[in-house]
Figure 1: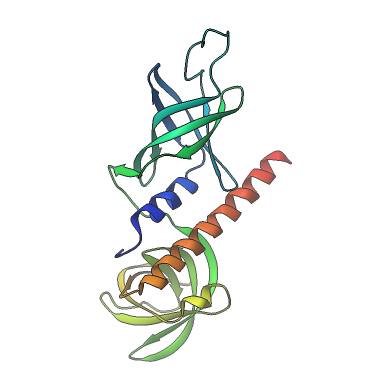
Figure 2 (figure 1 turned 120 degrees about the vertical axis):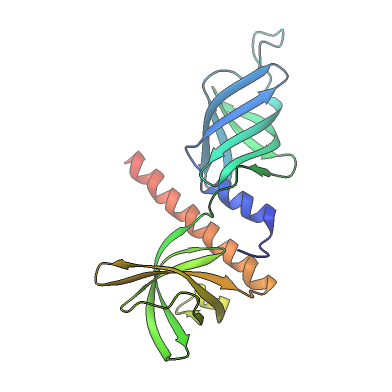
Length: 217
């Protein structure tokens, strides 16, 4: 992956990480809990109160703290303001840049989208099975060649708004009645990079919203 706005990508990782373990460090100590994504809001559900009594037999409703969220993409740390919602559930407002330790993989959005794939051999329609800001997983009837350069274009809005994108085949493996092929994007414009991050984030938000509704029902 190249050139994607780092802070946007880190927020995308946080948005995709609902349920992850989180550590909250304040002046009163360190607490553990779960990272919760609710629509466009970030929250933490703690195992205990993050602060002691304030002299009025109740903790304050606003806490300054440092958070460490343990995601599959790495440990994301950042300063934050925590405002109480109810009990041990707090709304999180980022108060500084997000830093990542033990960086791992990019967030991927599962999809089933039709794409045009243009190579030196011609043009064919393939299916995209997941998308990240750095690349796409394609299902192809035949194996694409490692290192092969190609041009891809999503069919149908809003993904088609990206326009043609360049890519290179970085891995392949048999998959069902065809081949799974990992494509790394190359030479994206700044506008394309930002739109990719936005589309993946929006898709993940919808995915987690559906999962939350299923749990409620």
